[in-house]
Length: 472
Image (cartoon, rainbow, N blue to C red; front, side, top):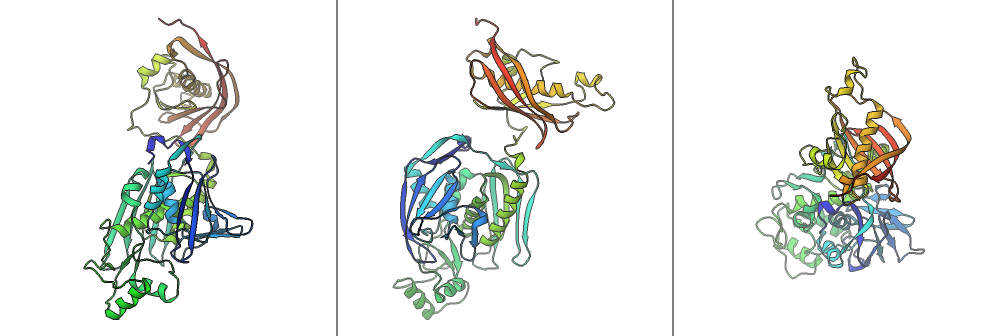
């Protein structure tokens, strides 16, 4: 499994994976091959058994059916029951993959995501040279189905977490809930949870030949009515078993639950898989009350529409004041030559070879407010640029082994825009990103000042790294 701190780049498989099985609803035998794909490819299915081998992207825009699973169709390609495999890909951090199929449905396996995860981990996951951009939300996104009493909400959060509640008015299941506090919990807490259905649903599916690939080992059957010997004989015949019984918990065939709340955990698994169809990795806290595939898909549509409308806010840095900084002020002063009152960055919260994020807390006590619009204090734009330049200096000097012996001098500022005022009480989030590799000491960067998730200032800058002191 990929840990949180590694999920900064996109990922694919280290090799191909071949999986064969039976589709739950079609009963068709399917051979499936998972193939590595290049950065930005995304998740796509290809029906290699059809003329021209059409491809359908894993996207909510192509969902055509949610009656007994999630089905995609595009370009003449139709693929059913995609949610368990999609959940496994999200849970292992795989972003780019081509899934070849010679049939219409993903193999059901044991009814969970675990068999897919085990195969992914067996071949391994490849870190790719491309950034993975997460989309965050700054407001609650809600979905409500009054008829089905389904409620779903996405809350702003620093990571991806899900809380799921189910209530089918069943004395066997009762009310259940499940939580995933972070995607790193998916494998151990969620992935092995199997699909389930009620006995009356199973009988309808059997009577209408809608569950041709079902096996008593790939679904939990909840017995929600009184049954007699004739019922048991009919079910045993349908599943090619000698006998079938009901254990005291009300589960068919004495199947052992993997968790006391396995049905709730599987509903959470379905949420993970269906929300993968948003098409963008997100950071949000999802709360789902009585979810199902239809509601999951409609909720995914709402989130995708929000992201498309607010796409300009992608990759807005998230500032959590509870997290310790990478550089505090004393550490910054060991890198930069600036001191009060011209040191305009308080701490660094992100830093890698291509990007830096700093924080400047603007207070009424700043020296420049005494003379710059004193009755209506506004931070001078030129000082906002200076704050960006200082953060950019941290990024540039992070490339040299002895930064205390170097300074950065800014040579050029282009495309500068001031979009909103910065006033006392604001927290400036200062982001600088490399636009091209550093050559001959020249550093080309794109700078953005955020107040919350709103862009206040942006500019392109070029600086030069110059050695000004000799090491001791």
